[in-house]
Image 1 (spheres, helix red, strand yellow):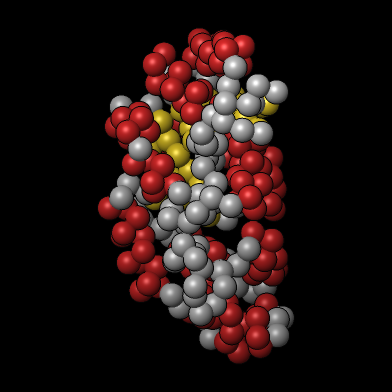
Image 2 (image 1 turned 90 degrees about the vertical axis):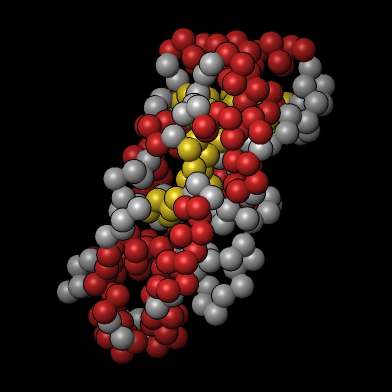
Length: 255
């Protein structure tokens, strides 16, 4: 996948190269990236990609930032070799990185999240599903589902299919897996947004089969090998609600 300078600079500044983020310089958060991008646009540089050719003192003068911050940006912007190897490794496993400067970037994020939209995300599966209208099916409290809940999920899945909508889930056990299984059985389409473990998730039998059939996609904010955490789940939920026209949230464990 070819990236322009703006997209490549975005990945250098924000993408973690390891699951535990054990790096010399900490990648920018979404809020930090938004502030940096605003400074760049207001400067004579105009474009983020122009920073690739600026030294530390130049960053200080151009963006009006202290030396410590400029050193961090400079360090991140010079991870090019490491990032290239990382991207190649992702591609070999069927995962691409999409940035806010790419045509493939989901338009829903920009429209609904504004400056809180993620600058980069990891994606696998059928590209066309990113732009399809969708409903989300999520669960809270546990993994057990009652017959009534399963019947309701089935009704939503069938209704979504009839309307040409995708079903979005968080990929977890319980309600999400029930919904994904019904999508697979009924011939629908699925977008999973796991809060960690993207690589292992797309390798699971049901998801692998749906992706191979062009009926599924998966995306994540986190490094493909990162573990599930509550903060990851909270950040993930914002993506789910931004992508969905409506969200159906079920209590579980018989409650």
